[in-house]
Image (cartoon, rainbow, N blue to C red; front, side, top):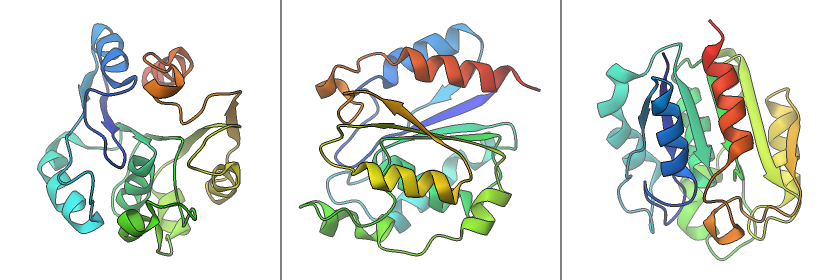
Length: 185
């Protein structure tokens, strides 16, 4: 069974959106699911998130799966510059400046050059899920991210930011994809 992590975004926490329902369904299948509450989510710093996440190092190996929502996806990119994973899921992910009022609060995560060679060398399976109507993260960010990861965008029509505000208290498509990846040996 896989160790699966779900990483929240800016201003987020472990029990929001579809996180709890996804955790529950995956745990029924025997997977261990960890959803950390990162420090200072309203004023996050990449360095402090990376230091905080170190306590989970014993749980992460080449069979681990990490799902990053929004800013959590940018965190996942930085993590992939250092760690090898089985699969990485980027849900409504920000991966660069977005010309939004939160830009100043998230710049340690997004105003940097990612080492795409290291990232793609540390993981073989990438999934980019994005809405055509995300009010925060432009579709161009998802398209650029997918190109850098040598994958395609899985488009969710009218999905907003793929959060509970947009109606995503559950996320069956994501569950299906994670279960499929987790079952591959």
